[in-house]
Image 1 (cartoon, helix red, strand yellow):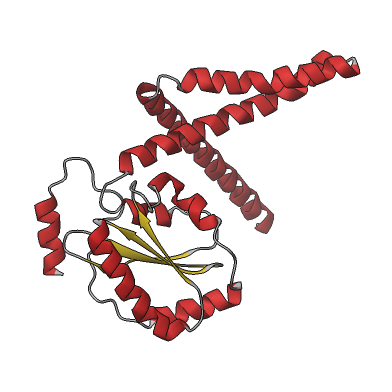
Image 2: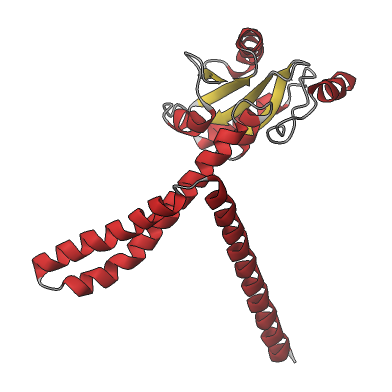
Length: 243
């Protein structure tokens, strides 16, 4: 009886994996079709990337006297390069559409790769300026988005507020934007990953516990992700004021 149940469980798990794989392929295909419509250069770039690896492999193969053997080995690498190009161009397109929209920085922080602890909208205004707090190996990073003159004041206030609790832990501040001294949305991940590592994972846990105890000042309730183009800002601002 137990053997039969195990067999059925394995079959069910296999069906679930197959369904999940099929769903992922469908999503990938839909993403490819959408990107192809918006990016005419996508296929030429992917084709060039696909051909580069086999060409290099075949060149090396001529040197060793086995060009076709090396060519076969280079094809999977060409496919991998083509997928990397596809992913990068999709990412670039997504960031381009999100850039400048309220909530875009918070959305980008939620999609950071690595062990970052993100708390969105720890401070903000009814104009949808916001300060997001990130805890990582560098220490505490305060990320601001919105009008620079308002965000700078918010950053200074938030830095003063948390410095009392975290002692000599480094605090960095970043304003997301495209003006001088700001960091563009697409480069936010790279900028943060270049910051020096000042604290350990255990210290990150301690910091998170300390800062979680601070009650929110009632910052703006930022949207989950960038506001769509044409969204009515007045209605969003009214909703923020009611909170």
